[in-house]
Length: 264
Length: 248
Image (spheres, rainbow over the protein chains, first blue to last red):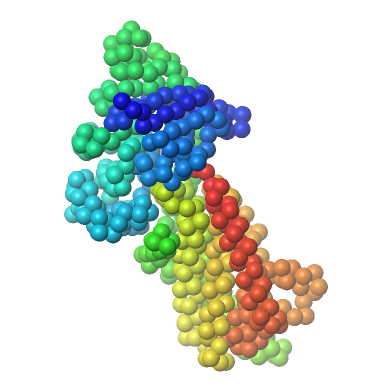
């Protein structure tokens, strides 16, 4: 098997704070890989570095055999991503959001229409294609984001807490779509989650990250065996401790309020 | 170019769909025009300066362009906080194209706003002296829109969130407007104030537009045009430089 994601000695520092502290791992082509960790462990920061949004302080990354520092655009073409926070334009329709993405990824016009239709059908949103996204429920938005992430046929799909706040039905559905593409196209799936059963069910391998370091990596069975626990949750707690992590509240909450005040 | 176009189109669609925002942003210029125009009109006339509505209209048109343009640029902060910028930033397109598309879109929106306000001023009683000068007037409108959208982008690229918003409003946008000569003639001012008005880019836009629409300008139109052009270019370059460096 060949590795499609290679990470070596990756470090990211924000002034004095080390968010990602010397991590290394490889992910094989077609693998489903989960990143588990408490809040503020460095999951999102790692994903941002893998997806060219953030430059690492040091260390090397290889995505689909390209270096995100040197060949940003080739790396960008290689992956699709569903972010932790919604990243759709609420003032556009589902179809317009898809078209926007298709143009940015330079999908030829003759392919564009067909692919968008297929994917919107796939996530069961074709009937709602001309509705503004702001009228969508959380689950519908997530489905649309997945469809959008798959639009340019990426080799890797990054999912940052994709099922946060979704009901079990939607979660199930969503994973069915993703597994389907994973099987058919050998698309690699890299996801983070707080749901242990999700990681156990969907990921072939799991890495547990805490305080910027990978503290354990392997299949769910291996992790349980290593910690001598019965469930993955127990294994996780044994590895990362029981204390509650405080994540600093970003500007986002204040922004939401501002936006409401400005009537947007 | 397709990327620039789709980004431009997105800005336009969002503008057309935000009806309350359009109506809201037309309220202020109309109020200014009526309150100041008719309020100060008699004094202005007695001072021998002629018709105040005619004097005021170009200033009010560019006021709405200024506000709309700066806010279109600052829109970037919303995109950033609400995640949509990420979707754009992970795409395999150059940051320069993204900046260009957003700026073009914002400037177009500001221009439309300016034209709408121009039509409103006609209803209220504004009379341009020479129809043949309308294309020149349009040129000034475009430049001012572009200049301040780029300024908005520059600001937005350096701000993390809307915290500094009030600061920018009170210490940048408002002074730019009030010291531009939109409301009063720039000749015969105390020298300190005159100096400040000379470094206000909007002053040259208003002077140019006033020259084109009612034939009253202090600087030459060529001076106005060259100064606006240079500042716009500088801000565009600065904007794309800062935009390149945005990390999310």
